[in-house]
Image (tube, rainbow, N blue to C red; front, side, top):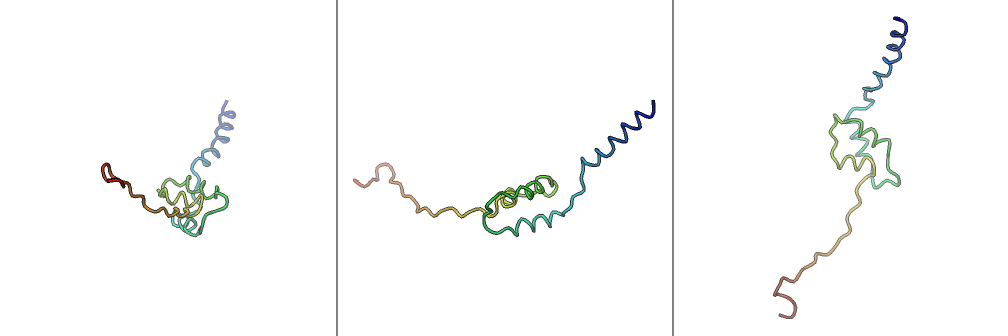
Length: 93
C-alpha cells in the first residue's frame, strides 16, 4: 500500500519545482536588454516578452513591455494644428 503512495509522491515532487522556476536574469539585466534594442523591430521579440511577462516582481512599465516586444515606438507624424472657427466667428463675419 505504501509503494503506490511513495511512487505517486516521487512523481509529483519534480512538478512542484517547475511551478516556481529560479529566475535566470535579474530585473536590471532584463531592463538592460530592453534598452539595448534600438529602432523598431521587424518581428516581435517573443522570447523577451515571455521573460518580461514571467517576472511580475520587476514591475515593468507599459513602455518597457512595448519596447521589449516591438522596439522603440515610431514617432508620430507631424500634423499641423487645426484652428477651428468658433461659432459666430467664421470667415464670413
